[in-house]
Image (cartoon, rainbow, N blue to C red; front, side, top):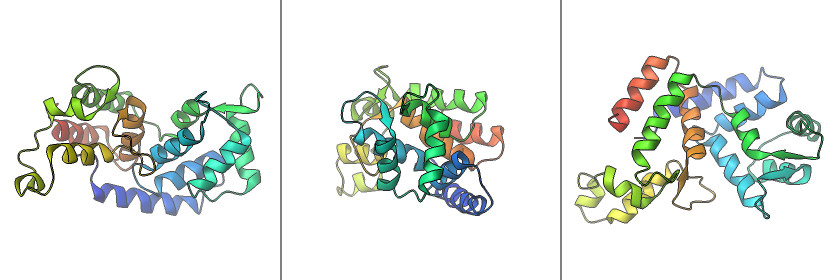
Length: 208
């Protein structure tokens, strides 16, 4: 149970509402991502990852602009430029996109981060920092899944569907990194007002 669809809808509506009143370019970019639901920021990250041909985890302005465009983010060139400049701290003409995505996440309290990491560690059975189908075999019981019971899906298909919740719609590789997991839950967190409610939701969802 990643995040409830009701929270997703509420958050998307709130983000759209705030967008019309917001002038800060970084905040506007964050809100455009959140308007797509919990996985909006993670999806933008995946788009950048696909474009990072040389795997150096950085983007120049041209790649950055193309990434925003490919993901369907509506932004004036000047606005995109000021976002880029804000993250190009050493004026090298490139930005570190991991740093960029972390800054783009809605802020989360330490208590929320800790409970998200508890859930991640529980799922990451092998402890290699990536959740895969193999990890899920030990912690996620498919036997009660209706589509498994009626023979429609195999165990493997159910695991893949489960991972797809956290994976990007544009690049489903069946693996979820710690960053992707945190990006997903920062989106869910943005829709939940109190730490207590968020922590209870996480504990119930993952039986922590």
